[in-house]
Amino acid sequence: MNERVKEMDKCKIDICAMQETRYQGKGTVIKKSYMISYSRHKSDKREFGIGFCIIRHIMDNFLDFESVSERICNIRVQLKY
Image 1 (tube, rainbow, N blue to C red):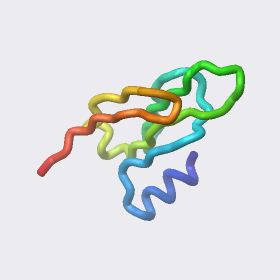
Image 2 (image 1 turned 90 degrees about the horizontal axis):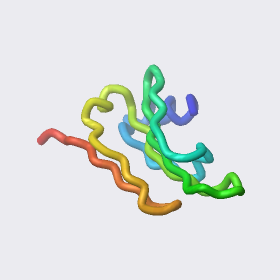
Image 3 (image 1 turned 60 degrees about the horizontal axis):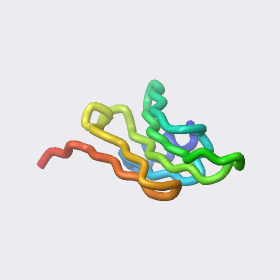
């Protein structure tokens, strides 16, 4: 995960969509420099899984994360004009 965050920082990407996250269930992980919201529908196989990695400086603008299916999810982020 640290490699992804380094690459996001280098390319000035604030939000990164992820597939095949392999985290169990649904939740949010907050680290020092990023946050991950993820979801994976229950399955015996460790496959699928979706989520978003959000850089720390915009975490306060994160409003909601909703999983629609094992391949589709929505996030709401408050943006400024």
